[in-house]
Image 1 (tube, rainbow, N blue to C red):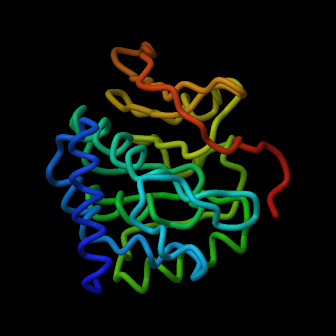
Image 2 (cartoon, rainbow, N blue to C red; image 1 turned 90 degrees about the vertical axis):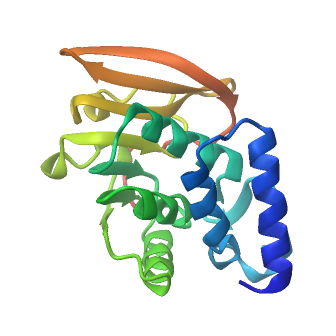
Length: 212
């Protein structure tokens, strides 16, 4: 990473710590993952700001704090492998997951974004990710059940198909809502699904239906 990016990454990690992120392994991985690789040239100067940024196709790269928080929550539960990500987008969250969990499956409905993300992951020598061009609402049943599911777009209602793909002891973290969205944690334990709110958030919508 170039020196100016290095300094910006240092500052960002300090900001994440001040916001309550405590998992040093998550912070180390995020510090060493070049976020600017996932952002268009015209916005690279904003790469290490703690904000979401547009990536085209009406989509965004998530705010670093949200990436850290969602990842930290799964790790706190003790999940180590077999993660489903719904909404590959730029591939940034995917790259963080790939360095912290043994196996990652990622779904993206926009083919152009999926292709770009795959190229970036290979550029960073991350090969433990399986990718699918498909409808995220449906999950990836043939690869489940999953120990962890991260959804990077907001669903108006809870996708039942994703809950059904949670393994016993597994957890899903997903933003729920339309105008007012709440990042929500679902845990599958003893055959029951419990849920708890994490934070108020703002994500692009999780679109159901045709893939493009």
